[in-house]
Image (cartoon, helix red, strand yellow):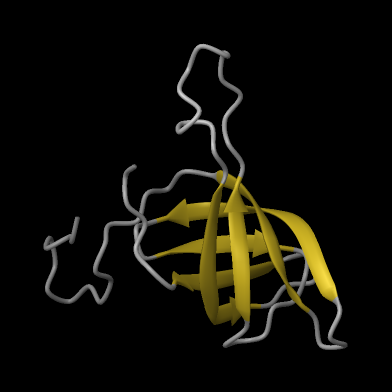
Length: 112
């Protein structure tokens, strides 16, 4: 749902400051596939701010997978599916120990 709280805000969706564990997949500079566990420190329907140890250059195309929660067996199978989302890195803040990567999802997240 679009956020219309501030006309100065460029984001279309409100960011939620909720840590979300996720796996990121992509291809590195040498052309090798990688898989890394990471955490988004905030997320919206349109993107996320990801903390990762791996350097991801601007414009990198990656796939993020949000693992399903551990649920009792009687819960719906639809609820327990992992979500695979295509994303593009739109900003990077470098650090010695980790990197903050701003991601834009290829399609907005929806409630299923």
